[in-house]
Amino acid sequence: MNTLLRRVVGLLNRSPLIKDRPSVQLIFVNDIHNSHRILYNKHENNSEIVPFYFNVNKKEKETFLEIIRIYMREDKSRKGQLHFITMALKYMDEFGVNKDLETYKAIFDIFPKGKYIPENRFQILSFHYPKHQNTAIAILNKMEDNFVLPDYEMQQMILNTFGDKNLVIKKCWTMFYWLPKFAELNPWPVPHPTPTDPKVLAQIAMEKVSGADPQTKLTMYRTTDVPDAIDDTWIMSTMSQTQQELLAAQPTDKSLIVEGPFTVWVDKYCIDYFVLKGEPIKREVIYGEYDDISDLKIPFWERHNFKIPVNVHEQEDGVYYAMCATGTSSKDSLLSWIRCLQKTNPILEKIPVTFKLTSMLDEGLYIETSDTSSNVKQIPQDTDREK
Image 1 (cartoon, rainbow, N blue to C red):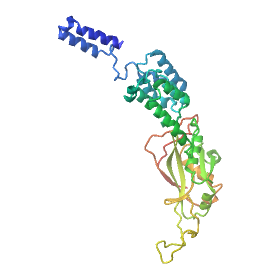
Image 2: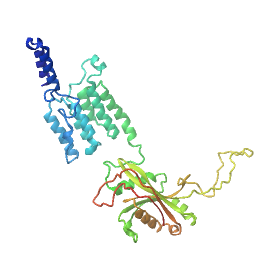
Image 3: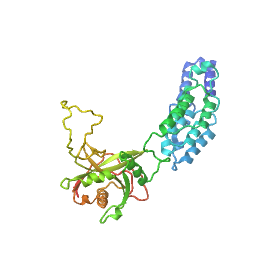
Image 4: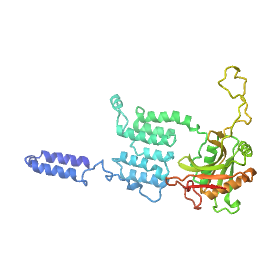
């Protein structure tokens, strides 16, 4: 249609009737170019392909694939394919298909087969169909950002669309080589698909933050087991045998602090957790003067013995005795957590505990469930209270 209109405009401009009257020619040309109903303006969002395709109530994988099938059925000439693919990549996260390989194949299948394959060396050197190659590379970049590895079927789709002498297939081969090497490097892998249960996410998060000590044990408590508890929620608590021994040696005249919330990410979800910490332990070193060179010793057989062995739970800002994540991140749930720890650590009944919670300024990120008291992140209030 656009080609036909251009030919008609060219013929009318060369006709004697309009050629002898420049004012009529100018009016005619301006009306053609200013009319949005006649010519297609690719710089406008509402031309030919508009985002209303993705404005649906049910946003899931089947709906997304149906939108792609509708577009391929309606636009057989693929005039707006680049714009549609760009919009599809933008809305993948919203539909929850950003980690689905089948969806990426459906998007890549929009490209017509064989049309963009270079036929000679000059087309190869001149970056044949650059916009289409850049859009295809954008699909692969989206896959790489979401750790989605292309398979041999997608490789064949790239070969059938762009050939074997282009940047798209090079990008695919690069992903074939590097992504498997980095796939298993995460020491705290997240299950695929990512769970949405807050308790499962909190369990993964606590295993992540407490992974420095392999002897750490994860325990789940319920606030309903604590007398006079207000919140009805769960508590994911971590504590190792080493931390219990350190807590047993804690002086009863020095208070402990429940501090937080701190944040840890599990995939795209943010989890709040809290720590139970005390003051740093003052060490008495047997060999205190390290700068004294009057009595040199061979360091290979020398052991700088301490009265209490240093472990990973002792940091410069204090000693970390336990960590937890609760379903509500509230003061009452943390108080229930301390009461649950008293069952295995009776010394907590004699040590005062101070709650030092900070309020967050940003909006809470949470997962809504049937139980309104269970979420992933909730904004706690400022408080400084002693038990």
